[in-house]
Length: 98
Image 1: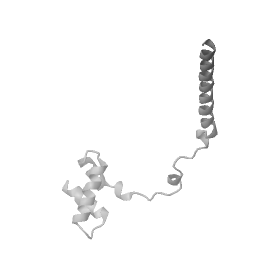
Image 2 (image 1 turned 45 degrees about the vertical axis):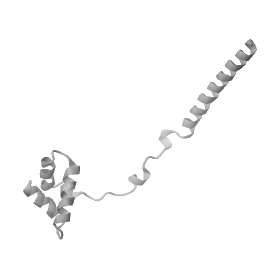
Image 3 (image 1 turned 135 degrees about the vertical axis):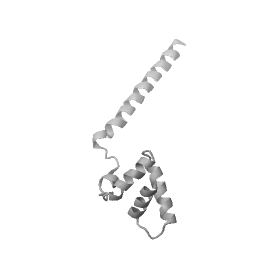
C-alpha cells in the first residue's frame, strides 16, 4: 500500500517536471525579439490624409464631440444624398451646416 502511494506521488512529480519543462521550451523556441508583428502593415506607405486635417473637418469633429465615427457617418450619408461632389466639398458643406 505504501509502495503504491510513493509510486503515484513520484509519477505526479515527474508529470509536473515534464509539464514545466515543455512549457518553458515552447517560449524559448519563439522569443519575442525575433517575432515580427503585423508585417503586412509595416511595409505599405499610407497616403496623406489632407481631408482629415482641415478646418472644416475640425468643425465637424467638434460638433460630434470628438467622435470620428459619427463624423464619418455624416460624410457617408451626405455622399449618398449629394452625388457628384467630392469628399472635401461635402465636408465643407457639412461644416457650414453644423
